[in-house]
Length: 378
Image 1 (cartoon, rainbow, N blue to C red):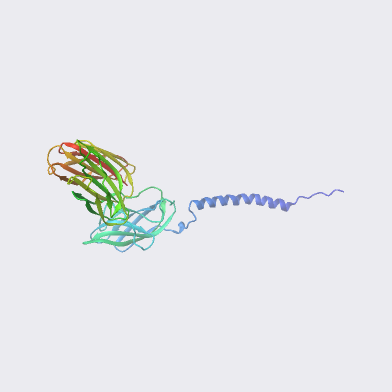
Image 2: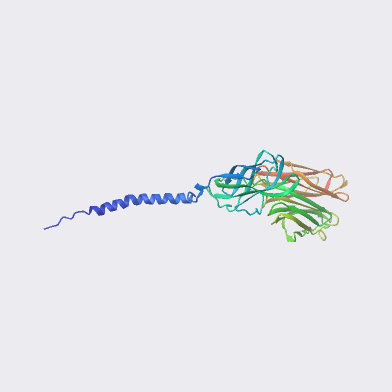
C-alpha cells in the first residue's frame, strides 16, 4: 500500500517569503550604500547655512565649494571707510595662519562687497554636502590705526557647488630695489607668499655667471635667465623666487661682487599676495623693443617682467621705457639708470582671463644689448 506525499506548504511559503523580501532587502542595501557614498548620512542635514556677524559687520550670502573656498558678501557699519587687507577662516577660535587679500580693499560703511577665502580641513577631498563650521577673521586699517585683527562672523555651511570661485586674484604686495648694492629688505603680508627677485647687470665677460641669491639666509629657486653678448662683454637678466613661510620683513642678498661689473648691477624684488605656484617663464633679447609672451592657464595669474638695456648713446638720466601688452597693458613698477646709459626697469600684469599675455618694452634710446625676462605665478 503506497503512502501519498503531501507537499510541505510551510516550507514553500518560507522560501517564497525569503525570495520576495530578500531581493527587496538587497535593493534597499544598495540604495543605502549609494546614499552613504553621496554623503547623505554625514550629518549635513542638520547643518543650516548661516553667517552670524559680530556687531558692526555684515555677512551675507555665503557659498562654499568642494575645495573649501567660501564666497560671501562682507560689509561694515562704522560711519567711515575701512581698509580690509586680509580675510581668513578657521575651524576654531585660534587666529588664522594665513589670509587672502580682497580684490577691493576699501569698504565704505553701509556697503557690502564679495570676498573669497579658503577654510581649512577640506582641501581637494571635499564633495557636495561636506559640512563646515568655523570663524571668519579680517585684518584691517581704520581711523588711523593699522594692522588690526578681529573675528567678524561665525559661519555654518555645507559645500553646495563644485564650481571654482577661488583662489582670489594675485596682487602686488610690496616692491623694492637696490642699484649698485647687494642687499634689500621686503615685506610680505601673508604666510607662504612668493618673493620674486630680478638680478640684472653687466657681467664684464662673455661667459655668464649665475649670482648666488638668498632670502633670510635661505637658498632661492632659479627660474630663468638670458644673456646678450657683445665684443668681450655681456649683460644678463636672472629671475629667482622664494616662498616666504611666514609674513613679515625679509632680508634679500644678491651676490653682485664677482658676478657683475661694479657699479653696473640692478636688483629688484617684489612680493605677491594670493599666489603660491610658478606657472611659466619666457625670455627674449632684441635691440630697442622686445616682447616676452607667457601662457596663463587661469583667469587669476600675475606676470612679473624685468628688462635691462645697454644704450648705444644718450644718458641713463634721460632714457625712458614704455610698456605695452596684449591683451592687458602692464603697470610700470621700478626704473633705474647708472652711468652713461645702463638702464633697467620692471613691470607687472594681473590677468583677467586665461590665454597668452605679451609684455613689450620700448626704450627711448637705441639699444646695443638688451635682455628681458617674464615669469608668471598663480
